[in-house]
Length: 153
Image (cartoon, rainbow, N blue to C red; front, side, top):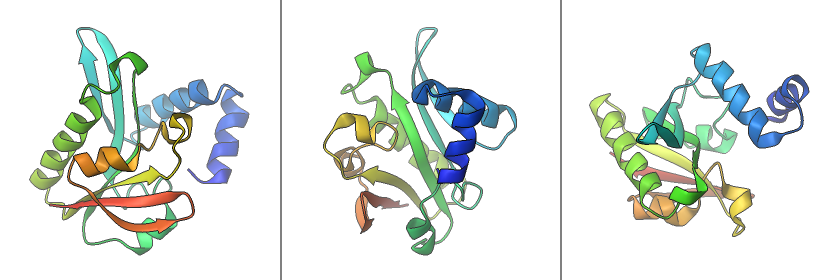
């Protein structure tokens, strides 16, 4: 998210960054400003993907991605899988499901915005390039530490 929104979020919710982001997301969900997908194991939430129409998510989508848009685009702006469930195909299943939903809704493409870092902590919320590649996405453009990963539907 842009620096102004991030500063506002931290000033309103505190310095616990992951907790802050969760609380901010709950507020945005309640207000209908974002939507998402949840995965459960029984009654326990094990994963979350924040994804929606690129135009409605403009404050979450990197500027260089908006400048390289290819038609009606569905954007995956962040996600989190519970640590004990990582590496079990849940994120890939999410991406596949999101692509099916996007096709059903008439989208031309689905995009994610992967980070170039190797350290897991740095790409927690955007995912690594290899995750998107495994789901059939390709690199469209790189800028600084971020990559547009796109799947044409």
